[in-house]
Image: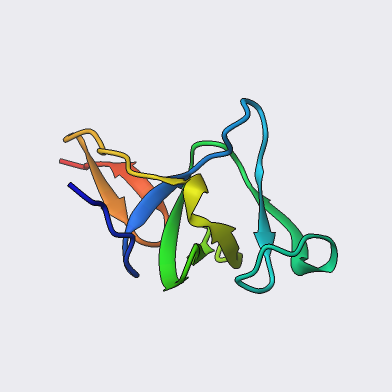
Length: 96
């Protein structure tokens, strides 16, 4: 079964190498250097997908910082049933 990343999804961001972060890009292209914004997403950090373009997704961190990441760094996460997922802040405990 194929998995399609779509705008509005909440996914985890992660780099294939342990301990590394994923750099946010200004544009949806593989160029490095000036294409990087200087902002990063931590391994395991939840992001909201805003848009997709070929191999890249425009994502937003919980603090609102946006940038393009290669889709290979986005992973599905099943949130525990005791949490709810907020587009803005990621998973939060359910209150009674």
